[in-house]
Image (cartoon, rainbow, N blue to C red; front, side):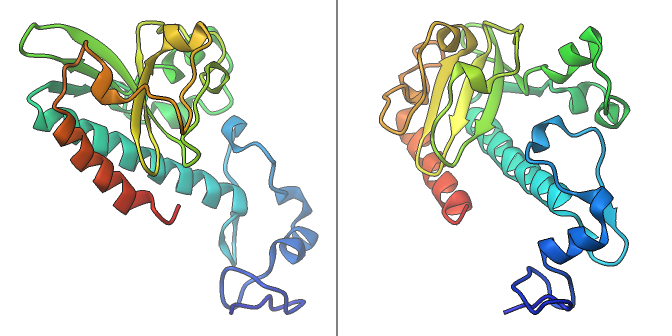
Length: 210
């Protein structure tokens, strides 16, 4: 087990400091509880990423895996899939918008992840992909004043892939581990449930230890 070089307590890396000792030495780099409202990242010169940066990057990786899984699911079923989120539409914009609180900046940050087109009927859909190990998602989990009420929120969990629209969430509907709002039940998409089950199995493999 890795031990802190100062106190001998548990730490994640050999030759490093535990969180308590690190923050004693670097009080200005204390980790904030809520990583969703970060303005900038902090780095430790001698010990790599801070807890805040590590947690944020870990969450980003999980989110990207969930996005890729849903992208490949829809592609395998013949949909036209276009990445629409801010990093895809305006590369590098995330760095430029750190700490910016203007209305325009907030609108950009809320852009859905994908635009999906069904080639059978030419219908187009906004799709926002989320990962939650808990399998829970409610209206409060969306950004405040989320403007895309017609967007479909697809939730990837460790066992299921479920879906509600932003409007349905605003009306009080919720995704929970026992709810039956499965992606395969959305008549708008009319997806092959057997294919969805295969992608659920992929999700189990990717996220079983998360």
